[in-house]
Length: 128
Image (cartoon, rainbow, N blue to C red; front, side, top):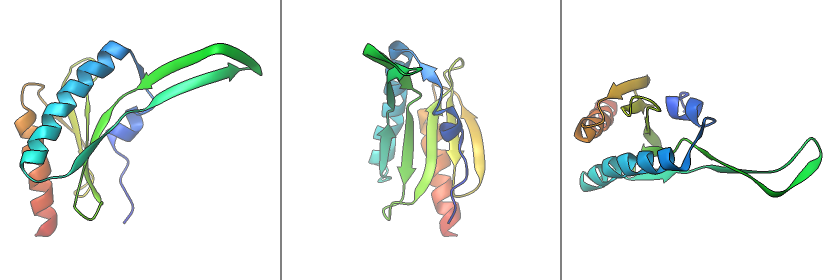
């Protein structure tokens, strides 16, 4: 089954500050704990790019850039169900439901339970 492109994948190339990454990590951690309580496995993806040279010239210490973190919810068989990121300016959750073709559903930052409800609904819809 081919995966749909998610907003998380599109945003994966965006560079963010360490402070923003930590803030997003905390928000995604809340969703991950709620998913875990409902028996839905998930994992966080953190990408750090280390640039060691440019134009053929090496950099002594390199340039470290953090990318937008995202949370992947999956079935027990490993198939991805959803991808969750945090909006860069709004702080809202951006939920992509890969199994039902929803590319970007926005959820208020103060409603992590709603993110979990969307993922659970996608799981039950796929089973039907």
